[in-house]
Length: 491
Image (cartoon, rainbow, N blue to C red; front, side, top):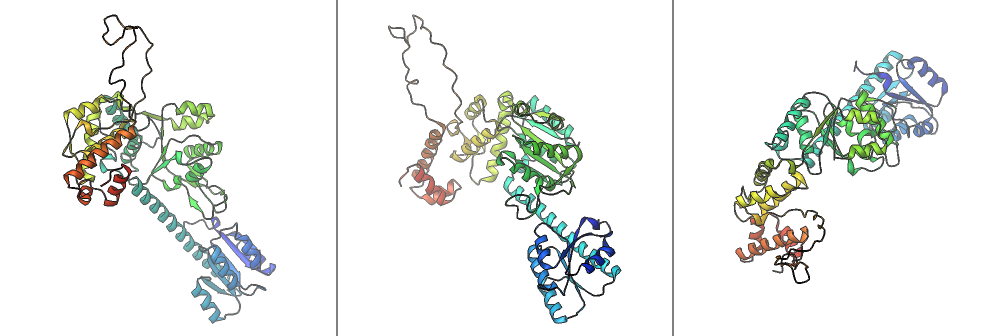
């Protein structure tokens, strides 16, 4: 309590006589942050915009007694400590008020300024502890909920699979920056390991035991991202019925990962620049400044920086965020990592599922390494997980692999075929081959066909026993029924 700044906590004093309010002002104006109201009705109106730590009320007031007022005040500001000033010690009424929670302390009039000052400090200390405990609970609940939603395999926390020279260089740069407090800009295509790299930076830093808070910025439009990052005071905007801490406060002493923060409003730019420069946060609707110690890790897809420049993002903000740029090469530029990553994802699937393949055939490896992977490692993980589940044995075969359809290259200019071309007719036009006339299936149809074949084969093996099929595929029976119906399998 000795470390508290008493003047940073609001104290509301309510009395129907101005002389009594003046006496209170004279005694405590230098010690506490005081607000005054003449009577209960005026005080209740004031509570719509004031959040006091302590409410001091006189018991004898016309129209609304002090106890009646404090009961209503408690409904609006449940955290506030209620102190009742009374010259009439009606013990039965006071006991009832204390038991109801409306009155925390009562003081006999005439009050002694030194004794009342001690009571006010004790009340403020109790409210400060209550608010700090709530803040810590909110932070813990948010962090626990975040981990529950975002939980990944333990191998992903700080370990990046890959033996290529490009990834060894990335790992070296992560090691260099992790132990510093520098903000980091990660640039990489969609599906690259940007979040894994952000976690690796956090885990390798002195902040490892502190929160790692991820913000998927694309989920917030307009001013919503600013509110999410900085929080708000009650009444700051329509719908702000309660005060809330922002993600930056929740990440205090830890790391905040901003995934694709674009576009940025001018107000958000100014606020972010203040955080990066001075470490200061103000909740929306508040003038109180909170200091935060947080490392910002930012991820962008290639070309976003140019989009920022066209949108007029503050050059100083771009400079602050780009102190330590880190580029992640796409998977197609480091094909030697494909096998290591595929085996890494396969081990993850095997740990999560009681029945799943644990190895890749040589033909499957060749098919994986020949693919261009436009979706990078995220696509590779999805392909491997699906193949591991669909495989009948312990080994993934080429037919278990289904890739995202890639854009077809542009048709080359038409040219006359050579005279000896057996595929040309007498007019010089190329004859259509059987493969060129074959209808192309989109990705969804291909995947459905694979799933339909596997389910039909499983039903045949199990003699139509759906419970056994569900067990073999490690899925709920209701999920199996849904898939059978969706795929048009009538059993």
